[in-house]
Every structure is written in structure tokens, then in C-alpha cells.
Length: 317
Image 1 (cartoon, rainbow, N blue to C red):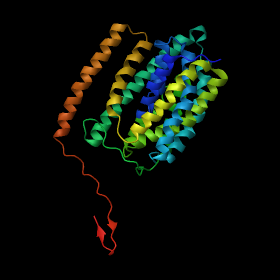
Image 2 (image 1 turned 45 degrees about the horizontal axis):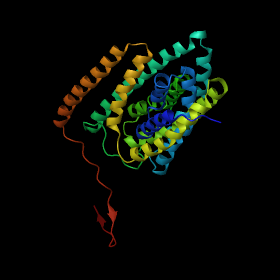
Image 3 (image 1 turned 45 degrees about the vertical axis):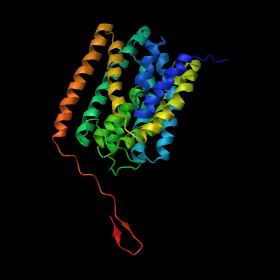
Image 4 (image 1 turned 30 degrees about the vertical axis):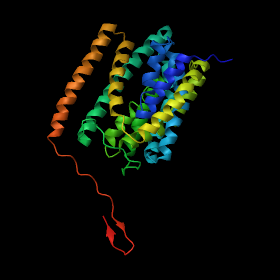
């Protein structure tokens, strides 16, 4: 009989909602939560988190597929790079010459990955503010795909990098890809970014899950408890994100990732708290400065709706 942990269910629900809302934060939040809150060994946390994501991601991806907020061409080229790389990432982390210090080394790798994820979130917020000339960084979402020309080579390379990170740390399927997509394809709307990221993450996480099921430290009881909360959380979060942006959530997420990354790297509680407070204060000050600058610049013109033909053959605006 599988032991169900109510605390893990609540944690899975919270993380699942954030994943569905923002398209990121699964491994970046779930793995540190398992290590710090539930005292799970790092390799067990990574393996169980990745397998849980295999079932959690589709719950949000289906919503975006139904609302047509997914660019399937981008999904294809991302998966060409990410799927084999994710499977190989499991072998790489097991083959590295850490010996008995594997857990400590994995914490350092995770910490660096989380700091990278936090940095990418800040970059995404800054790009969004400049692109849309709005203080929250994103305009209203639309349930349509933006017309973009797929840059195949950079997209495949992005998939390879993210796949390796996911296979080794469980971090990267959303935190890295979604920000890099924004930089490569600035024409994509927020809902398209989240939807495309969630759908491409399904085969990516499936490949990593297979590797961890075969060679990792997967825990069925831990994963089951997480999924009971994470699946409905991801579905509900995707329902929200397919209609409205989650910019404020991402900013809070960046501070949380910063604190988690520093803690994994061995920083003291005082240093972690100080860095989080500094990021909160300096981030708000920077936001105020940018907001004032944006107020001085005219808003981009709103695109007009296409004309429609009336019954007498004339066109109406």
C-alpha cells in the first residue's frame, strides 16, 4: 500500500498551479521544496520530480492545445534537440566522478541552475516591459498563434541545452526555454509562450523520466502524493494563464528561486534573507524607474481588426 503524505499533496498543488500559470517553476520549485521542506535526498528529489512532471505537464498542455495557444512548429524543433539530450542527461549525472559526494555535488549543480532560472526570469520581465511598454511587462493575451518564422538551428540548440539541464537537475523545461523563446521570438504573445513551453515539455520530460526510472532513485510513494495535488493545480493554473498574464507571479518566483539557489549553494540563512530582501527592494526601485520612463513613451498602436463584408457587398471596419 502506498503511503500518501498530505503535506506533499499541498506542496504539489501549489507548484502545479504555478507551472500551469507561468509555464515554469516545476523543477525549480518542486526539487528545492522536497530537499528543504521534506528532507528528501537530492537525487531522489530530482528523479521523483521529473516523473511527477511527466503527468503534471499534460494537464496544463491540453488546455492550451484546446485554446490554440501552441506553436506546434516550435514544439517540433525544440523536441528534436531536447528529447535525446534529456535522456543523456541522466547518464551524465550518474557518470560524473563524484562518488559518495554525489548528493552534495547535485545540490551545487541545482543551486547554479536555480540562479540561472532566476536571472532568466528577470531578463524576461525586462524584455516584456520594453516590448509591450507596460509596467507589468505583458499585454492582454489572445487565443491565437503569432506568425513567426522558426529559426531551426538556434531552436534545436536551445532544446539540447534545456534537455541536458532537465535530465541532470529537473530544472530548465520551463525556466530556461520560455525565456529563451521570448528572446528568439519576441512576436509570441504570453499565452503562446506558456502554451508552447508546456506542450514541448511533455516529450522532453518523458525522455528524462525514462532515464530516471531506469537509472535514477525514483520514489513511487513520494511521486504519487505530489501528483494528487499537482495535476489539478496545473489544470487550474493553465485555465488562468490562457486568459490572463501572470507577470506578478513570475516576479515573486524570481525572488524565491534566488533564495533557493543560494541556500543550495550553502549560503547562511542571513545571507539568503538579505539577498531576498535586497532583490525585493532593488527590484521594486528598478520597476518604478522603468515605469516612469515608460509613461514618457507613447504606447504602440493597437492593431485594427480586419474588415468584414456586409450583406450588400461593402466592407465594414
